[in-house]
Length: 353
Image 1 (cartoon, rainbow, N blue to C red):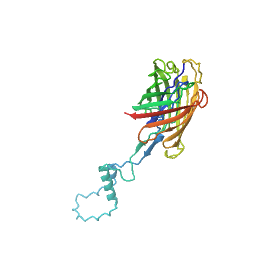
Image 2: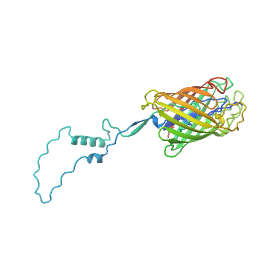
Image 3: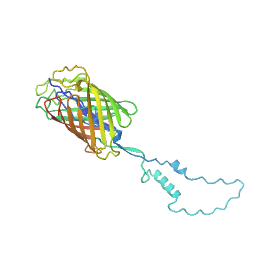
Image 4: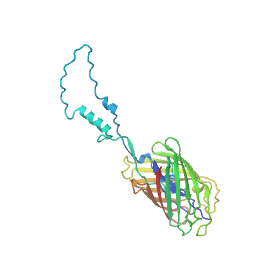
C-alpha cells in the first residue's frame, strides 16, 4: 500500500512563513506553504530578523514643555516692575522650534526625519520544503496550503494535497501552538477527504531562534481507495519530532542579497526514518533531518534539505510585499528514497484574525 505525505505549509510567524510540510514517505512530497514557510511550521515563519525597525525617541509634550525655563520669582515687597518689551525672537529661535514641535504633536504629526518605534512586517519566503522548523504560527494566525506533485513515488500518477490550520498562544511571551488538518489526497492516491490532524508546540528564543515539538497526524480520517486503486493512507502512526531553527544575519539590511541564512536541525520518528517500502506503520526509532535556507534576495530563498529519507532542493518566492502568498517549487527524491526525482509545487496563504 502506498504511503501519503502530509503537507501544510510554515511559515510563517509574526510569520508568514510559517510552515512546513510533512509527508508520508512513499507517495508524496511537499513544498512549503508559509507563513514559514513555514507554518506547520508556517513557513517560514517570518523571524524578527525579517522585521524592519524604524526607531526614534517619541516626543512627549511634557518633555518639550520642560525645556522652557520658568520665570524668575518676583519679591513680595518689590514694586511692580515696569514691563519692558521683549526682543522679538529670531525666526529660527529655540522657542519657535519648541512651538513647532508642540503643533506637530497636537496635529498628530511626526516631525520630519523622526519616526516612532514601529515594525513593518513583510511577507517572507519559506526556508523549508518538507521538514518542520522551530518557528510556528501563533496569535490567531490562520493558514491555508495546497500542493501538487507531478507523480507519486513508484507510480506515474499525479496528486495533490491541501491543508488548513490555526496558530494560538504567544511564542514570544509563553508558548505558541498550532493545530492543523491536512487533506492527503484529491482522490488519486487515496479516497478523497482522507487526511489527519497534526499538532505543534513552539517557543521563540530571542529574536532569531526557535524550538518546537510536534506530532504529525495524531488523528486520522480515511475514506475508501483512490482512483488508481490504492487503499487509504498508511501514514506512520509515530511521527513525532523535536526541531530547532536559527536565523543568521549575514548582512544587516534584509534587502541586501544573501542577507539571511536559516539553519534547521531536528530528530524525529515515523516519516523521518530511513525509507522502507515494507515497514510497518507502527515502527519505532529516531532519525535526523535538517534544512538550509538562504535568502537570495528580498522575496526569494533557495533551500536544500535532508528529510531523513531523501534529498530535496528548491526555491521559495513571496511575490507580494503586502499579500501573504508564498509559492515553493522544488524537487524531491533527488537521491535517497524513491525511484527518481519528482517535481512538487506548493503554495500557501496566512491571515491573522
